[in-house]
Image (cartoon, rainbow, N blue to C red; front, top):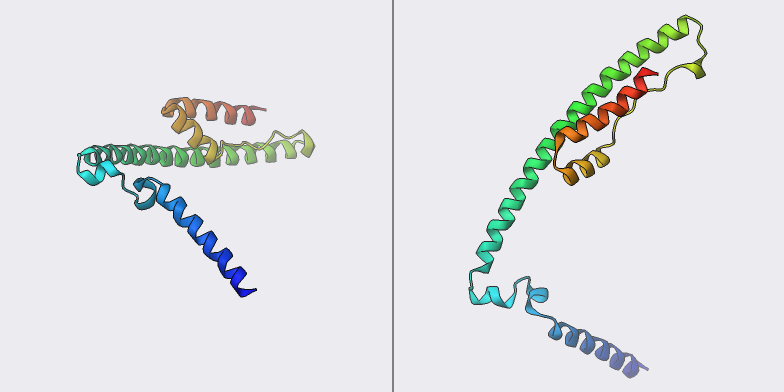
Length: 137
């Protein structure tokens, strides 16, 4: 019984080793065969990665700035909405007839729009128009 189990384990191990041998060097060690030879392609890739990293940092910084602005504007709109609701209630308006609370875009949606379009102005205009509609009712 032990012999059968051991032979099956050896067979599975051998199959894994064969699979690894058939893979290219890049998948095994994280380095391609061309880069091992010192062809210089790695340096070009590195500068491209650095440029990409810098652009991502800039986009992320701009996104965070935009998000903070949206949050501040939302707080102001909620305060104005709250005052409006209190005035309406003092005048005898039913709660269900009060205007809806203002909303803002989610950070996930903002990031998708921001990265997809690459423009701040489009997002700012789109999110403000949604929020303005909620406060004008």
